[in-house]
Amino acid sequence: MHSHSEARAINNELHHLFMSGHVCESRLNKYKARVENCLSSFEPAYWLLLARINEAALLTAADYADNAEFTAVGDLLVNPGKINVHLRGKSQPVVKKRHGRLSDQFNTGQCKRDFMKWFSRNAVVQQAQPPLLPDLIEKLYSSGFVLNAYIDACHVRLRQITDTMNFLISWGIWDFEGLANKRANSDPSTLQFIEDHMCRFDTGWFIQLGMDIADFYLQKQSSGLQKGAVAGLKTETGFVPY
Image (cartoon, rainbow, N blue to C red; front, side, top):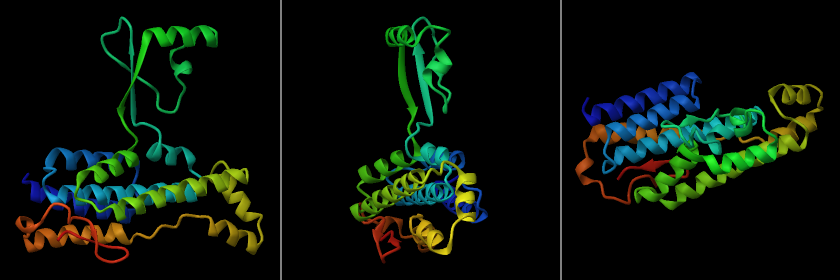
């Protein structure tokens, strides 16, 4: 498939996926891989699509945080997608279980101290796939195509996500059931206080990026785009690829 056709297809699919409410980390990773495999990083659409995937990831992480789904938030923000463990004497690495401890997976019965000593001498841990959001934001920051104002806005929202989690945890809320119970037993002022600490991010940038990508191909102005202009803020919630 021609890269322009693939870019339009990814853009349309992202829109329908997001509107369906079926966004998740694994699907966003697949779209990221499609962009990286099918488009050139010299194409503005490459960075616009990565920015749109980043927006979808931020919105999804915020929704997880607002619903006290902390493990899912962690997978997007801090937990590597894949960790390989290279063991002495083994030709192939062993993939670490994502939500388990190394000792649970590799300790065959030694005491903690002996296991740690053995593991440090016989194993090398390699991050094979970084967590999605830090990886996307770093790529966008290093690209030269995205304004720092957008990167700053990303970090503000990342802080809000962690603030929301910390707020809920400080109240002893560790999961969606706990949050639902807290709300069910709270008076209106407490409910408003909880709401004031939620993320509730606006979808404006995600929508605007999709429109910008569609307009970019509709107007066929790729030859006129200059590096450094892409993802410039057109309004408080928008981007322009010009």
